[in-house]
Image (cartoon, rainbow, N blue to C red; front, side, top):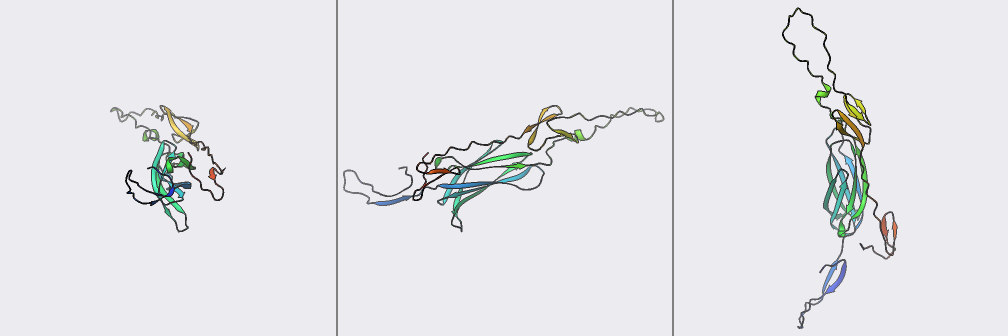
Length: 238
């Protein structure tokens, strides 16, 4: 049998016989997610790559495993489960920590979704900006002028001719500025190559999922949640 939340008694009865199992009590409590928060933190420093963290905090009405999903920009996604336990304050909380690499200057946006009960429910959405002091990727050939070709043997008493300086290749930087031989983009923009020695600054993509539409039969929707009147309990209906 597939059962939801129930507190009842069941009996196995042999058809055509007087034998039966007698009444056996069965109580099933289904874990319900009450809310959740997401916190994005930086490990510190300005050099990339470096570690960042997503702290997941989910409150439930029962102890047990809590399945959830974390979707972030740049196609990063995790589907995990963490145990909810009772705290000294009397609340039942599930806590998990996900670490990821920051490889370039970008704004990371993440959505925390509950998968409890087979339904997907958005619990929290946060974004955080990460800056890299070493974003500009300039090779040494751009910073150091090439060595002049060796001259053939000649009369040491003969005066040398004028030397011609070798100019480094010109860099194009659409939407940004060229500084120290590199294309530097303003805050909130990422640098992408558009050709030989050519770059352009494009606005960092931030994925904002649409807010889910919530229905609440016999109750009211407040702050994105179904709130039931006194003496009623909230149950998932779809």
